[in-house]
Length: 140
Image (cartoon, rainbow, N blue to C red; front, side):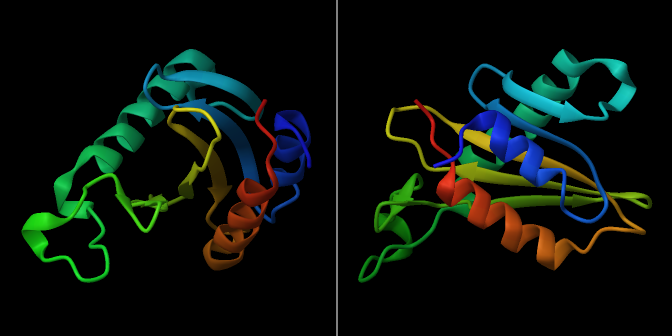
């Protein structure tokens, strides 16, 4: 299983990749970062991206409904042991920003952030590659 550095480097092989990071969304700290950084401030990039991930993950509007449950009985955090939110995608005129939540063995909210150039990147393929990377990621 690849570790953080290997996964970050592999993420940079995705067509159009400009930067990648693994971020703990509760604290906003980057566990690893590679490539370009918006505004040349990696701490701010991690904190701002974590704020977006936290907002998406904590919203009841995005809660998954488990099998056999009605809307009022759903657990907003999990359905069938899976996180309610898998990805967050933000598109701008020039970039795709893809956040993918990572399942961890410990109680922590971690997500993978991939920043793509819109002209060179393919959002669908990037989502598939990032899903596979996150499934193989070994967090110790």
